[in-house]
Length: 409
Image 1 (cartoon, rainbow, N blue to C red):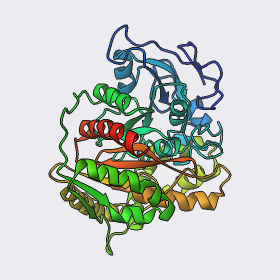
Image 2: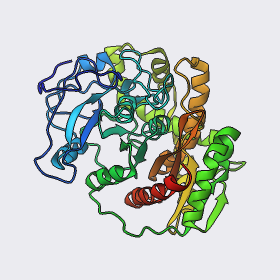
Image 3: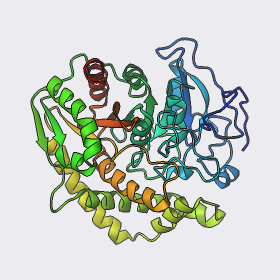
Image 4: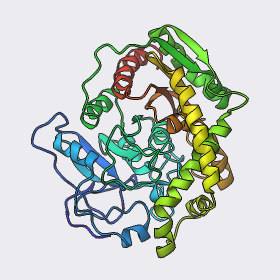
């Protein structure tokens, strides 16, 4: 992988979070709201003079160095933040596990022996391990939300289209978003002010605090019990809480998962089919299997799924009208063991996608907060808001978690 910028990445990458063979270090502007903040970028974000490797050696080999910075990275540098390196991603960002066949599995400091989650695995690992303060990731099917939950971090998947993806490798464009990780809610909000180009909401209103009853039924008794005190604390803080069901007999979480992955597969195939045919890249077994399957999805199946998506998006939008927020588990449980079988990980992935498809299919923003633990491992809780409520969610999380931390954690 060719490099033009030189510089010094973390001298000892004990976490295995950074792309091997790269050394990327860029100072931010001399002044700005993020001066002194260290950040890393997932290796699908362009850095001028660097090859964007996207987690696969054949991709790196067949692509030239980027001519300019990605839009999000440029914003952080302009705000004074210092770039300290490029982080490992699952191959072409098409996984939720964080296990890269070529470059290894970044360490999950918050849950040793367990996967970090993907595809923004290196970014989550670097933040959780304290190497950087924040890191850019992408979220298509959960690639910020799930690593954040597994690694005990705050993370935001913004409203779809809210942050420019110029200079970012596309996976499935109608789902792709730029997100980020932090260890503290305040810094998550400060980074959001820069990336969203928005001011804090001084008194964010919540007319109803909705709790997705069926979402909590999906995760099992032990995880639900671990999250229950936090949910009750949030409900008490916001008031006017109501339990709702976002699925039903005609639309289960499995149905939402299949709808999401069908549309996603068609878009992924459209983006990468030609490169795969020309290059015949070496993929890890699970990712290779996924790309092969994606090319079997028919236009008819994708069209039917797109129609179902619009029906769901309309209904979900009505549910969140009027300054409501929806509380759901971020993931179906704690991070799986790194030694888990391929079949167990595949089953877990299906349940993950059931939960993450709510924001994915709707395009609505979702924030995840590290407010619970189970078996000594982090367990995230999420709030989903209406389109454009990104800064509101950031401010709600900052205020609420500070109060809850003193009373529950």
